Image (tube, helix red, strand yellow):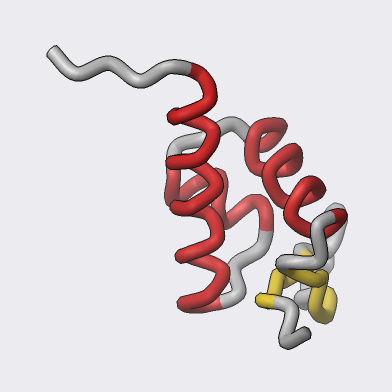
Length: 77
């Protein structure tokens, strides 16, 4: 049985989230649904990557109800 420690799991989750953002610029909610990670976990990963300059927030999506989803983009820098 191959088990991952917390640091390895964090790196794997971050890699998965970054791969999806690179592919399609998903929002945090979409990333949570696709990966099965909690919204809090996705937000933590995204906020960390934004602080590191790896990704940036794009435009807000269309929604008549609730908070508008914000697409995420790889930082071109």
